[in-house]
Image (cartoon, rainbow, N blue to C red; front, side):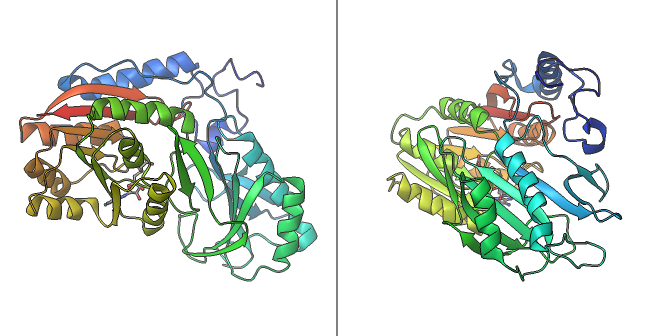
Length: 389
Ligand code: SAH
């Protein structure tokens, strides 16, 4: 299927079943949206009316971050693609309907270059060999492209010539990083990095703000819908110009920085990942903001300290990972009693659990529920919720 409009059960993508990434590909896009809407309604209807989900105009090639695992089969052929769902067998994928097409082409080109440089792929069983994964991140607004070569071993013979060769084919690549991951792990990235070319980071623009992105820091993978999501979050935060705002689970500071630009009096961000915090601090500077500060640490600990100190907070923005928030975080939130809480969630199940926790213990009520389709063709659902006292 190339026109990307029609879908036939299991038919539109050759690796639909084996990949398992696009669980809803057998449904048309409007059907997918209806399914997601009904799922959110089922989980959250007890809290209030669910606004109609905001879908994408063009729900293809929206992913700005693409990664591929590398593997050599018994006949010596190098394969790049995804792990077959539930296994460690790599399924070859050269192009994907939801991934950025340039990123896909770069990954194929890296694969084709390997033999001429006598570079091997890493074998997880023998723990020998070289290339393990390739990760490409692209700033859709800036055009900047980061290529990350994840290797099982640190020695990279003729790395300068390799970088030259890939850049000759793709001048769009603005930085190349080697990440070394020698561990027995499901995580793609290890903890050692060497910049082989360029700055080691890329930039993107969202909601008029500029953001620096590192190989390991979290950045929303669908920038078109991220703007829709953040605009809703700002509408729900209803900033007047003097509020003190906490942006928790803030990643590289995106939401807090947008809030600071859009009239918050003072913003404090908290995030666990040190690379992301470094990016966030840099991002605040690059956007000319001096009313925002970032802290590295557990969001629950941070909230407890802030509540103990009796800090006056007007708005809490929270955007936890799939596992949702914690009782420690939410107890502190209730003690702090901000006027408004904006909860951004990528998992409606933990969202429902946390909303129940908050509303059963306080006079907070859910005022608005807005699903946004950040991940077309997949089962994932994003929501933004406003609570006020
Ligand atoms: N708000 C950001 C990031 C959301 S993703 C954005 O929109 O881009 C969730 C973030 O929570 C990730 O950056 C992750 O590193 C961070 N995180 C996970 N557990 C955490 C914890 N216990 N305390 C603080 N941050 C945490």
